[in-house]
Image (cartoon, rainbow, N blue to C red):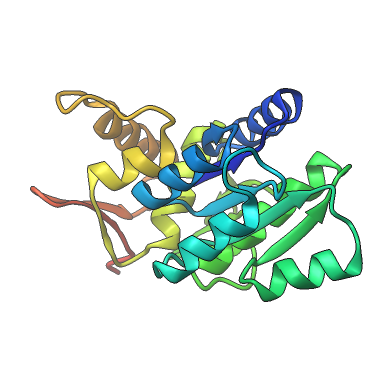
Length: 225
C-alpha cells in the first residue's frame, strides 16, 4: 500500500514515516503544500495524509483541488485545528477522516488501514482467496489453518494482490504501491518478491497455486479450484 504524507514538522514527518514503513507501507513525504499537491496529482495513493496548516497551499486547498480534478484518494487530515467547527468543515469539504494532534501512532495506523480498505470496498480487516486468509488489522496470514510468517513488505505485497483478487496487476503497479523507490526497468525485484511469496503460501503438498502469471501483463491472484 502506498501513502502520501504532507507535514511541515520535520520531527513529526519522520516519526509518522518511520511508523508507516515499519507497518509495510511505501511512503512519500513532503513538507509543503505545493509539492504535496504535485505528488498527489501525479501518483496513485491508497491514502493521503494532510496537515491543514502548510506552507504554500494549505491542506484544505489541496483537498479542494484534488476533488475538483476527480481524485478520490482517501484523505486523512492530521492537524492541530481541534474545534468542532474545524472538524465539520474538513469532513464536509471532502476529507474521509480527521485526526487531531497530539495523537497516538497506533490510532493513526489503524485509521490509515481502515481508509486503505475502504478504497477497495472492504468493510472488514479479513480478506480471503481460496483457503488463504489475511487479517490486515492483526497482521496475520493463515492457510488451511497454518500460520504463515511474512516480513512487512511481503505482507503488504500479499495484501495488495488479495485486495485486487481476480484482477491483473502489472509490475509497474506493484512497484508504485509497494516500493518507496521505483525499480529500474531492468530490475527483477518484483519477480523475485512474487517468487518468494509463492513459496511462503504453499504450506504443504496439497496447496494449490494462488498467484498466477499473465505473460506480458502481470500477475493475478485467484483460486482456480
